[in-house]
Image 1 (spheres, helix red, strand yellow):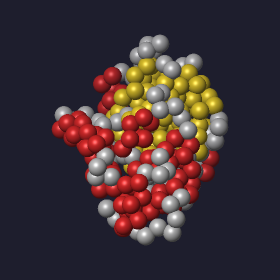
Image 2 (cartoon, rainbow, N blue to C red):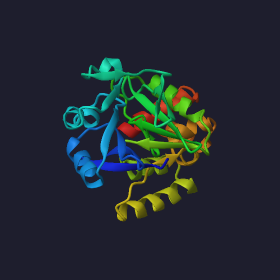
Image 3 (cartoon, helix red, strand yellow):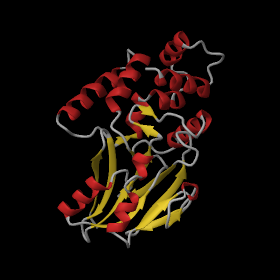
Length: 264
């Protein structure tokens, strides 16, 4: 079986990730915020919509769902029960289902929103993690209806995965902006400097900077680095200089980093 994962660009910086089975021209889309680019892509590539997976309720992730279901009435919609989407097959923490003989596990990775889900697809000995707005390359999502403690726990859970096999598919192209913040936090981090150069070349060529690996995020993402290497001296010193810390527990620094990023 040949499966491809491709991004469909939407709005100014969204990616609607699309999993394509090239043997039967079936496809799955994740977070269909806008139906128009999806319909155009499906028409150009003669695809049939099998499923839609939703990570959370924000409009730029669900705005195109009903239109797509009207065009593809046999497609199945997967979402958290609390989202209230009509005709959805509800999924929740630890649920497992199959697609084309491959396992998909659902994780609740709250923080950005209280019911935020991630879909973990095992394919060719790699774990492909469709993480919505929880983790971005070199960054994390803002806290809306979730809590900073939940977001920290979600990152801690991601950090438990194997760095050589975990691939993250964020729903936005925020990498360069996040890397500039990361560089402010760790100005001497050569991995961040190299990542900026690489991301700049990709964007100039009109290419996405994601997916990203857990191994790379442990080098460049300050929110993950303070979990992976909790005694990161430069991160602690930079944060403490800007927001005096009451302690150096990872959750305290993680929370301060998010506050700094909110105003960056």
